[in-house]
Length: 285
Image (cartoon, rainbow, N blue to C red; front, side, top):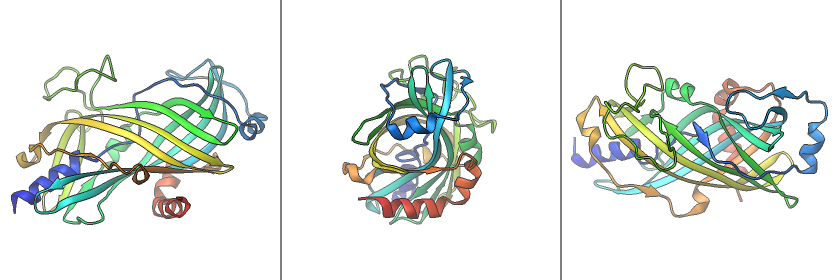
């Protein structure tokens, strides 16, 4: 195996293995369009659970969303390569006493590399299932501009200051915990193909969505950045550091959301993931 191949495996794991849910979120302003105001009628108000905004809430509408994070790096042996982290979400738009929030549930994550098939990065179900719900403010303007406010996503580590606190570098840091319940520190990602191994890491991701709504469809740009630390690996070569960065073309990181019936759950969305993605790509400008 060439060293360049190994470096590619490391990059494909670390550079763009970005999950799409969060432990914390920032607050944002919010407002109701006439469309969602009409949906408000007929929904019971309930007491919000731990971490929810406000003291009562009403589900206005439910959406399935696919979002793509695009990154790249200059890699030995392969040169400049693009990798996409594709997340499939179930989102509820909820009216609270403090305004409208989006509540996201992560259903499925896959890694797509159009030009490199030698290494496969898998996000295990245990990782996906361990991702908590994320809640963040929503702004809906009269011209159908639609913003889902910034969220700070933290995985595998407890941080007092999620935005600024340094991530741990070692598994014995007391802030590290076994988020996915597999007996290993942090969260675990599996690498298959020319290089096989399991990697434990901690991660922080910032995301914000800005788009346009046309009744039952919202299309827009996904703004994001990420940082992570590898704590351990079953193959020592996977610990090699590689520089990576976000694709500078803002059109390469995007999202499409479609309104669905409330009875549609994450299992339905995961099963239909290829069709959802194909439909979303057709909806892009």
